[in-house]
Figure 1: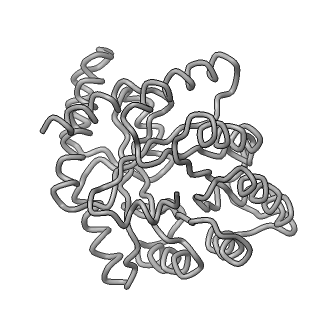
Figure 2 (figure 1 turned 45 degrees about the vertical axis):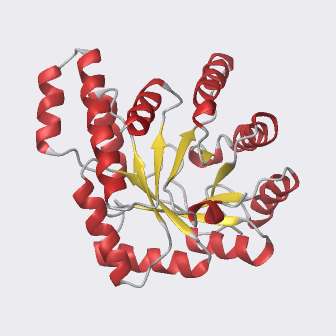
Length: 288
C-alpha cells in the first residue's frame, strides 16, 4: 500500500526506521528488533541508505525481506550519492519488481572524508531532481525529508523552505522530519510550511535518547538542538545509562502526546535498530 493512502486516514500513522546491518551479528540483532516491533502493527517501516550509497545492496535486500517475508509495508530510502541515473533506475526497477511501492527521495550526505556534496557525472545534484525522475518514470509513492530547525547547509530558513517547496512540486507527496526535541520547533515549522503553500502531510521524526554523547553527535550532524532543560537533566545523570534512558523515553513520550494533541499526521521513530524504547513509548501511548 502507498503511504499517502495510509496518511489519508483519520488517525496518525506510526512508523519505524531501521538501517542495514554491517555484519552477521548486526543482522541477527535487527531481525530480533523487527520481530519484537512487528506485533505493534506499524503503519509502515523504512530502511536507510548508507553514506555514499555504501549499503545499497543491503538496503534493497532488507526492504524486500521486510515487505515480502515479514509482511510489513516498507519505504526504501534512496539517495543521489555516488550513483548515475542509470544506476538509480536499476535500483528502482528492482524495488518495483519486488512490489515495493514507497521511496524516500534524498540527496544524501557527502561520502566519508568529503565535506561538500558533488554529484557523479550523470547523477542528480538535488533530491528534487531525484523525485522528479522517479515521478516521471514510475508509480512509486514519494516521500521527502525536511528539517524543522533548518538544513545545516541552508543559508536561511526561508531558503531552505524554498528548496523544500520545489521538492514537493517535483513529486514529494509527504514529508518526514529530521529528529527534534522541542515540539515548538516542529509546530512553528509546520505553520511556516502552510504559509508557503506546502500542504502535504508532515510526519514528525522522534528519536528516544538512549545515550547523551551519541545524541550530541547526531544533533551536531543534522543541525538539531537539545533544549537546555533536557540537556541539563541528561548531564546531571552523567554516566548512569539507565537514568539517561529513563529521561530519554519520558521526554519522547511527552513529545508524542503533545504532537498527537496537535493533530500531527504521523510519528516516525528513529529506532537505531533497537526495540525496547519504542515499544515502551508505544505501549504507554496506547494505554492513555
